[in-house]
Image (cartoon, rainbow, N blue to C red; front, side, top):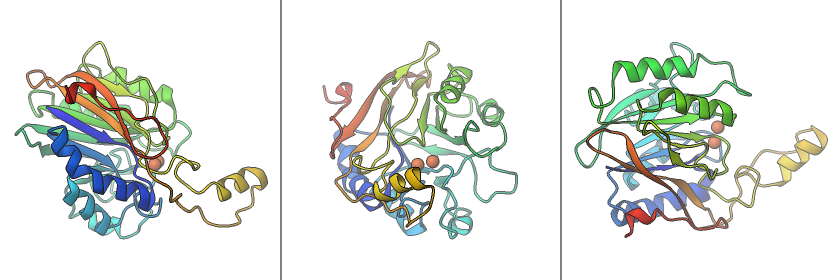
Amino acid sequence: MRLLFLGDLVGRTGRKAVIDALPGLRKRYKLDFVVVNGENAAGGFGITEAILDELLDAGADVVTLGNHAFDQKETLVYIERQDRLIRPINFPKGTPGKGAGLFRARNGMDVLVINAMGRVFMTELDCPFRAIDNEICACKLKQGADAIFIDFHAEATSEKQALAHFVDGRATAVVGTHTHSPTSDERVLGGGTAYMSDAGMCGDYNSVLGMDTGEPVNRFLTKIPRGRFEPAEGPATISGLAIEVDDRTGLSTRVAPLRMGGVLSKAEPAFWVE
Ligand SMILES: [Fe+2]
Ligand SMILES: [Fe+2]
């Protein structure tokens, strides 16, 4: 199975790049399953239902979220009817929506997608390790699901690496999001779980995390807000991780970064274009 994950879409430029590219990517790489993090899709803050529908129409199978999940207040309502939108599983009990779901891939296999948020340098939520453990014990690899994909939305690389080792051999992939810069540590761990500390964002990298540089620089310098954070509008780089899954075991065999457009160096999963 061929699985593609794309990191946080930021603003109009990131959104448009992904919506324009996804149909072609699905075809070119014969993708079976695509997960996209959409927490910054609407002007950098959250996601509207109209944008979600556009992403799903373009070829995303599932959209994950993070700390910006409910920045657009309408999400509190529509998330209950949008089966393919997943928010962090360790939010307080009673939070609208769900943190995991089982979805049918193009090749007929069932993929369990889990979104969780870290707690280091972030809001104190329920323990993400225990929340994920509960989920993958209730829906085990090759028993309840053919593949298990985890988007771990966290600040600290230590927490992301620890989680990956905690589930190594029990999940197909753990990919980090939230820091908006792609790391170069993508690999398959000893037990067969694919891992990358951060998939990077889909947005304009001539920015501060996808935002115009003026206000972020001002806030660091003066600590006084002078304006709003506005998404940078330059050409976007699409950034994510390509994962080749062994259909027999549900574990990963190969991973490679995907980067296209914008200012970052280009990267293409060679094993899908041979
Ligand atoms: Fe983000
Ligand atoms: Fe985030």
